[in-house]
Length: 414
Image 1 (spheres, rainbow, N blue to C red):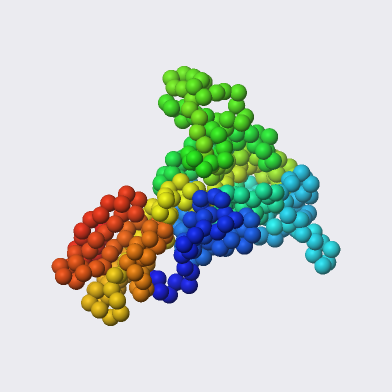
Image 2 (cartoon, rainbow, N blue to C red):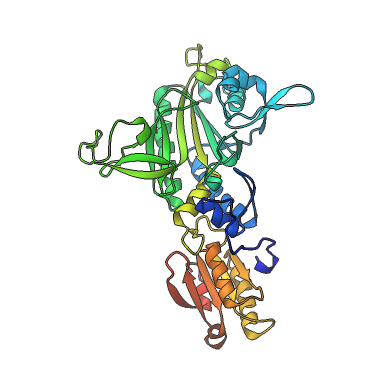
């Protein structure tokens, strides 16, 4: 993409009403546009990052057998009243139509997915099944804050599974747990599965997936020897205590941000919707149900918050809007511009995602904006490229500078 054709532009200063690092950087760099507290529009660069995150999540959910659907966003009030959530969940938006019917916009999908599953899962032969979607969620947060890390509208992946037995749910939970940890690793994040209470969704023990970051809103205690981790708010343990699971390590305290969760829903929603299947003896049974969530837009905010520095955003290759930022130092139709133009065409032919800064700006302005955008590699086309065919390549994360030939830039491993 030519940067001269990108309709968004970077800002020199962060908006005065944004206090969180992720929002300041994302708005300045033109990735998002703030509509109101907790609600953002995603601009071309931001949309590309979201889609990269979604791709990673989708691949891992498909790998554990998840089947993707797209559920309705506008919900009738009846199923919510049937489960009791209409009155018990305080973050539900409630809408009244001109026909005097009540609706809500989805803040979770149990009330929609359970009746869908009931229609198709009628026998033990149909189980287990995992159904997921990636879509928008809406919650009436009283204090939307932390930029895109906690909003009133956000993008989320939620998957619901249905099982014959608790043992089968536990088996599937273990598979999804590993898939979640793989997702976070692929995104360059360190995450821990943390024991927590079930909150508004269930009274059972649930698991939150926490990414270690100084910008986190939660405090966790984790063992430095095994995988044990617990939310500090529900634990009577303290930093420095011996780990009760392995007895070999001690607990450390850290700030973390929740980016995923798993709830054992048991048979609650099956009971609410009279959802039964025929077991192996022909008897009616209630399926065990699980819920598995990942905040897609929240992950984008956590990545921006965790890796951004004083110069701007820092994206890993797995989520960056482009792999290469090609910066031309040429003017008009000079030789530098011609070399840059030819390299841009060849990079595209080689399948490289490239943002080409072909604008007529000073070198310092281009470099500062390139740092702000945070694209992994910056390839500079200057006089040296014309004279000897050598290009300066800057790694955004480390600042390391390399000299590479045209052939090296176009090689598959480059």
